[in-house]
Length: 333
Image: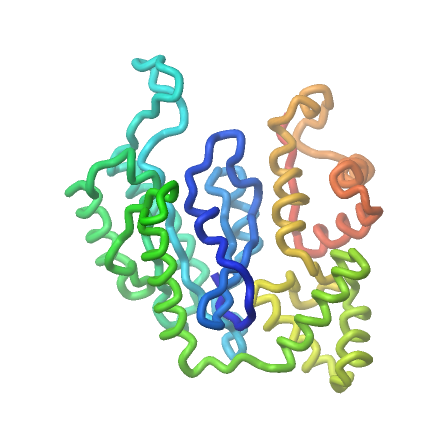
């Protein structure tokens, strides 16, 4: 989650609400939550293994642009129940409990992932632990507490696992969702001390948002971005300044920009969720079973698939963008 300033409606409750299997996260869902003038760009990462390579690509080294990068907070959500039926319990709707070992293995994976993305010079990353579906679990067991304590000690040099952990029942108004929100924003306030939010970046952000709303153009070229900055905001036509603004907006979670690529994504949620999410989910759909792709597809096929997803005539541009970003999607037959 990246901290910046703006004003939008609080949507954290929808993130913590339990999901059923058909509605699980596809790709990465990007949302914004706001409180006391602080806006957080919240990236809800799908936990399925097929998305892990995409996460790795979309999470550049934390602190790579440390001169103007907003600090990050991470939240690990853990559902204590499996969504599939137990082999010994055929009652519809029944769920089997996950073990403390499963929790530790999953949490350790993500802690290692964050640690691998953290630059050596960065300050300690902060991770908040939230147990969802509190109605389906007793108080945090001794085994879970022991796992958290052990991992906190193992990663203390690079990651701070925030105390306390939270148990949430998002169906209820008093289900501790507010406590999680308050905790996140308190941490944000502390982390933002001494962090300067560039006014020019906020101005560019507003103009890009306006451009997206009017033109419905979710991807623009680097030349278009420079023209918007130069013509509408009178920003000096300087490559270094333009790149600094673009990298800052990328770190804020407003756009997707990677240095050296000639395109900018103005709608991260659309790209991460609708485009990449649909492509990565494609091998599991019925359509894929009738297509002999054997692990790879042609550019023509990918453009055709993107056309069916986007329906806005940018499929060729998307393929160029994904190739430039080294986002290779391998379809397994």
